[in-house]
Length: 295
Image 1 (cartoon, rainbow, N blue to C red):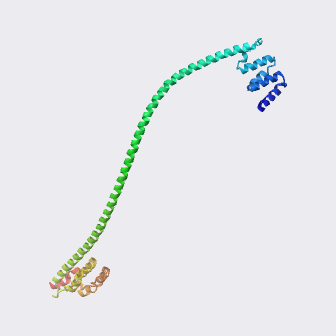
Image 2 (cartoon, rainbow, N blue to C red; image 1 turned 180 degrees about the vertical axis):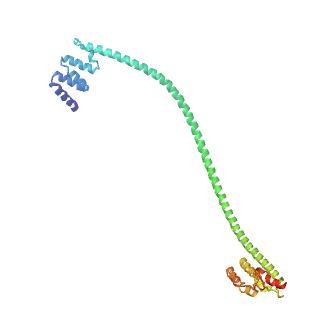
Image 3 (tube, rainbow, N blue to C red; image 1 turned 45 degrees about the vertical axis):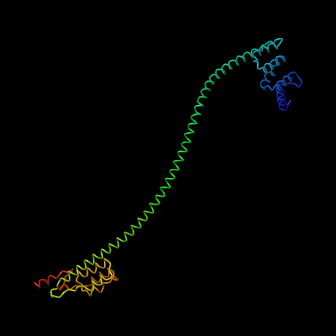
């Protein structure tokens, strides 16, 4: 007997006051040796009517025979009772097994149909998987081809863009050169225009006679200085033209007719000069008082 079984024995023997070496002690040991549940052991140990009935209850509990099948008066041959009960129980068990077998057969038949259906579905799914895998591989190949084409197109576009940038830079440089040439040409045209206006003005002044019969200055020295080198800016020429229109004497104009004199300084020289209104009016017009005397 193991330590655990020994502890169970002493626990139940003390609880039911079973003496060591008695018949009840033997029945208790038999229940422990057969590994009966403690509840069933206590159920037959608590029987006090007779040792015979106690042993019969033990056997019924071991054989899983209902205790209500035991008669009040015990038979002379209890093995007949046990055998009949066992046979009855076997028949019930056999019927139960037959019913389970029938249900299992029906279930197997249904499962067979379901299994056949599942096999068909499985075959269909395998075909679908193969088709999808094929489509997937084709999609991957097509995607890789498109990505490669896109990469090549991108490289080509980048090269074209770089060429466009180079061409644009060249056009910008050409445009800057043309703008500089155009600016120089405009300045040259303005200078020629000023010189033309100045010469026309000078010609008009030469043809204009003063009231006392003296000729006005022909500004020959000023004209020669303006034509030599063409170093005057358009604004400087404009100031010189203004001085001539105001009939400033040539010697006074020559005092500031130099490319080194700024237009602002020329304007100051002009503003300082006070014309003789008894001879010539402002802006090259004859004084009306003198015209009246001549008339």
